[in-house]
Length: 302
Image 1 (cartoon, rainbow, N blue to C red):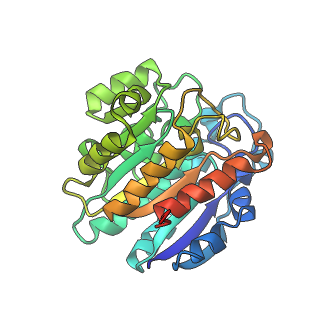
Image 2: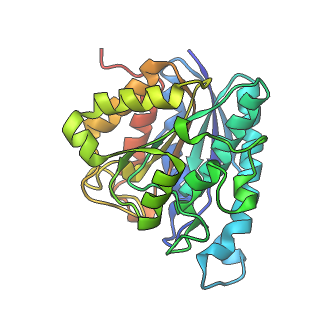
């Protein structure tokens, strides 16, 4: 079995709805670490990184003003995920909002680059997260990490991986998308990012879609960073998210996606983000995500 290092990042500056900073606590209340240990893994829990609380920052009417503070947290997170890879651990990053992935994946990419290896990225999300500070309509930085991991947008966030960019477009795949801004559609075409929408899953099935996604992201890379936004799953199963979109993947489709990632033996690191306990019911979204993590780390039905 493997070695897992859990890193919490209680950051809520990347979006407008409060509460997502409690996501790491919700996952721990759902017994994430012991339930992964039950699978035979060595689990090391680092607790939470320091992240600024919104109430301690100057008031602003524009969410984009938080970008420098977010970049500082992401830079710090990248140091931790890179070190985990160097020491033979699989970093499991608990968000916080999805902007943290600009740091988690960048750190893994940096550690791989030291071995002359590249990183693939599988992004499981209702959204594309491919806006830049110039294209965003909301100003929310949690809608930008994919763009920054590809080297676009703000220099601070785009420059965390050394050398950059963290990921090449041909090795980045979005799965489960059903709510894309016009600018994100344009960016996906211009940058050459493959997006498997919910229609692809409806028509072809999760197994075929994930097989293609894993193959694309793995081609020429040393392995995969997997970033799971809880809104990947339909809000009927995962109500505790800030940006729910109807028509997401089912409970079983979500587990199958994680089981296929485990079976590929390509996953190097994992994010679980965007759980908002304020909007949840009886911690069911965190419970669901703990189950998904267990599937990703080898839980089998038989």
